[in-house]
Image (cartoon, rainbow, N blue to C red; front, side, top):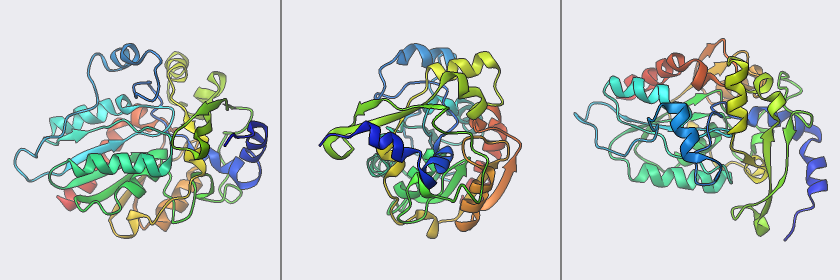
Length: 305
């Protein structure tokens, strides 16, 4: 089955979907390391992390007293965006895993993360940034070792909701994402119906304004150049039964966010019954405010540890 890209482009930005897509973009968009993207992977990871990979192998907790922290990035990013959080948590004695999120479809991405959880011994605190929040909402379902969820500038969908319908953008305005700030080329995607899809990127000229407002122009330009796209299918595929209905959750809301509306974030966090914290940050919070992110993760880890 082929996709009429002209029709999808019009549908993409019509009504609720157009405004809500803003919430969709994750902030860590700092590098392009996943196997789903082939552009300068090793070089960009090395440059952004000083040679340190954010992805850590699964290991049993050293003394059994602390949960493993599993970090799931969102769109326009890769796992190395968590580097500062990984280093901080490891120094405090936590085992940390930051797997690559494929960004191809909500169900397939969640299934992949669930497979990582199945090979992780001991209790887990599962953390998701931006689109990664929708992934952990589904990946934790049925994963008995997950004891807490932590959302960071994230989507927190309810059952049957897609990313673009997680909240009403008319009620919670603030996103700057739209047809003037994104690029949507066609792309093959085995996870999508018929194997054909569209990919969504932020235009380089808009990247700092929309996504990386706390970064310098040069740093934002580098993030824009190495961003990984989120597939159209991943944005529109409905969520399953949310794990937050059965697990305690924490949510760090970014009050200067121009990708996911702060009001929309608060709405979703409160709907999930999360313990809410706020930070005066743009969407790139995991890169620009890592200590605030670590503090919320530690709250969850200590509560369930």
